[in-house]
Image 1 (cartoon, rainbow over the protein chains, first blue to last red):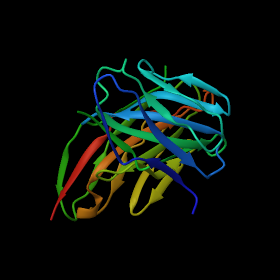
Image 2: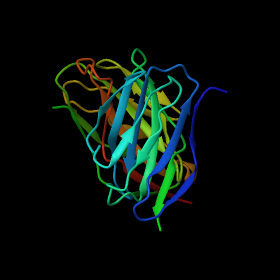
Image 3: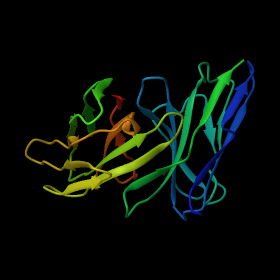
Amino acid sequence: DGGITQSPKYLFRKEGQNVTLSCEQNLNHDAMYWYRQDPGQGLRLIYYSQIVNDFQKGDIAEGYSVSREKKESFPLTVTSAQKNPTAFYLCASGDRWEETQYFGPGTRLLVL
Amino acid sequence: GNSVTQMEGPVTLSEEAFLTINCTYTATGYPSLFWYVQYPGEGLQLLLKATKADDKGSNKGFEATYRKETTSFHLEKGSVQVSDSAVYFCALSDEMNRDDKIIFGKGTRLHILP
C-alpha cells in the first residue's frame, strides 16, 4: 500500500526536552512538508523540502528543525526553544506535476 | 500574495439539507484549486480539484466550479449525510509558485444533525 505514515500517534514532551516526530512516505514524491494545526485553526507550514538534502523554512520554523537525508523520510524535531508545542502535527508529501499533497494521519504532541 | 478565504464555521445542517461552503481566492497566476476534508483525529484527504477556469471538480456527491470571473470555488452538495461531518479546507496551488507550496484556507467545520 502506498501512503504516508507518521509515528507516534501521541507524543508527550517534558519541559526542556527535544522530541522527534517521524514521517515516512513510499509514494516516491520529491517534496515533503510539515504543518502545525492548533484547535479551530487552519494549517501553518513549519518546514518543507523539495529534494533530498535540501529544505526551507515555512511560516513558523522557530523552535523546530528537520533533516532530509533520504527521499522517503522527513523527521521533525521539536526543540526546547519551542515554548508552545502542544498541537496536532501533519506531514504531507507531493508531486510537483500533480500539484496535490497527500497527508499522513498526524501526531498529537502534548506537554507534561 | 496568494491567499484563500473561506466562510467561518461551524456550519450546522440537518441530514439531507443542501450544503454550500464559500471560498474565494487571490492569486498572481493561474492557480489550481482544491477542497480537502479532515475527519476527526485524522489527516487531510483530497476531496476534489479543478485546474483551470470553468472546470468542475466532483467526488462523493460534492461539487465545486472554478469561477475565474468571481475568483471563487464554492463547495456544494445536494443532500448531506451525518458522515459528512468534518472540517473542509479550500486551497490553491499557483503555477507561478516555484516552491510547490499549497495555500490553505482556515477551514470550515461542518456538523450534520441526524
